[in-house]
Length: 106
Image (cartoon, rainbow, N blue to C red; front, side):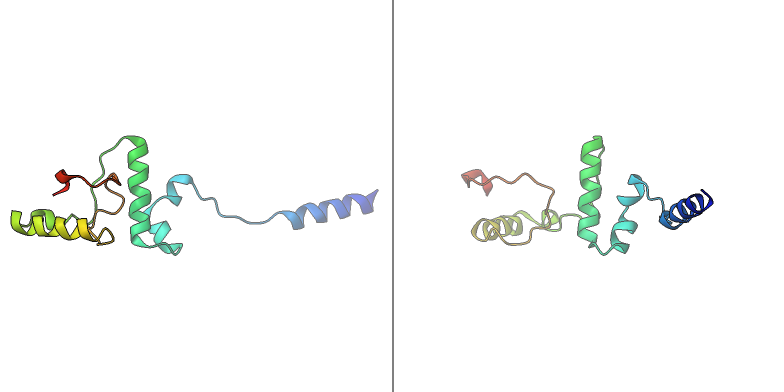
């Protein structure tokens, strides 16, 4: 009986492992995501999705640059975006994607 209790206690002690307690709120912080190897864009996407699900207002880290230009530059920029949909418009993940082109796009 002593051997059984000794073996059982040794098995229980060896199977216990140390694990750090990580909360859900800590996992979604930008510092944790960046330290885990994700990019800053991914950290911003996670925070945007979290604020959308909570119904909070989200302010982006990087503002849309071309919206501050004059009307002529914005028109040509939109023409280029219309011709080349792969052009980076700094609105990644912050707009609804409409697959049908319309005249009002310009």
